[in-house]
Amino acid sequence: MKIPSLRWVIAALLFTETLLAYTDLQEMSVLAPVLAKTIGMTNTQYAFVAQGFLVSYTVAFLLGGLVIDKLGVRWGLGASIFFWSIANALHALANTPNELAACRFLLGVAYPAAFVAAARAVSEWYPPRERALVYGISVSGATFGAIVAFPLVAWMTAQWTWRAPFLVTGALGTLLSPIWLLVYRPPEHHPWVTEKERQYVKSVTPGERLEPGWRWTSLLKTRTFWAVGIGRFISDSVWVFYVIWFAKFLTDAQGLSIRQMGKVGWIPFLFADIGFIGGGWLSGRLIKGGMAIRRARITVLTGVTLVRAFTFILAARYSTPILLLLVGIFVLCTTAWQVNLSVLLVDSFDPRVLATASGFTTSFGTFSTILFTAAVGWIVQHYSYRPVFVLLSVLSLASYGAVVLILGRTGAAVQVEKSTVEGQKENAL
Image (tube, rainbow, N blue to C red; front, side, top):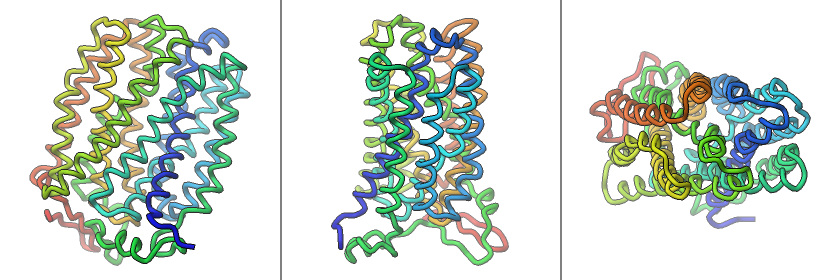
């Protein structure tokens, strides 16, 4: 059996698994006001519960990339979907903040493969002009998950109990896992791919090729690795604020009920999908028009940073519709930033080490979000959300400055991060 355009079937599966992953992640954020009443969870306790996930998530990213590169995308992601879904379902048994934190910790152990495996799948199945778009489609599933989570969780909680969403989405994940195992194979070994598509997929490969004796520690000698890692260390907290704290902000600062929040809280995440897909499409369009690959990525990063620098204006009070519009614009630029920063790795590294590179650089970001989440909990508990929005502007500017400074002149083109036994040297294509 041959399936025409099989790579787009795989893109749809990547979209679906990240949609489910972020639905699972977002459930806690949507339920925070309910849990404050049912189990007496305070802002600082909520931050502690969120940190339970972030701590294991950070460690798992450090190791998860190595595991995916050993197991491969098929088995690594299939196992991850199954185990994080079981961990999510276990939330329904929790009765205290500490028990919720333990469940979040378990969720974070298996969760990272949703993203490091997706990055490697993109490098295996798509040429450069399609990578940013497909990576954007893949991670846009995350924000579709957030869009689904708001009304779905609010509805199930009102109809049944706050425990129901965890059970339902956990069950869906255990069904998705075997579907992924059935469908996915690398293109060179897939029995369903046409020969024409196989040749198209493998016609252009990433810049870095592995030499004999290559070790993962060689990643530490490349500018691209450090630019993405430091950039994520500074900027990932911006996105995490919208994921973890925005629903609570709507109820705390805007005075919305959980039903009202369920009706409108998903709107900024629709903008996020536009950023993921549109940001990837735009840099791909620039490449198709003749711009050097890395210059196209940096051009988009520059444009969205100019907008994100004004996040501090959210410190003022607005009506809910105006607030949602402004947050949507900043979220759109944040996700466009994320997809173009992350795809620098896909452009530069061999697929066999891409999950490792993605896992390590993502762990930079998740480590900083542990500190950031604790800081936001303290700031909100003792002051308000206003200082947090000023901090988001500062982080956006600082991350861009770090990326451009580290890349230096290599920002003009795709970087060949060529590893050898003796060392590495970097050359612009």
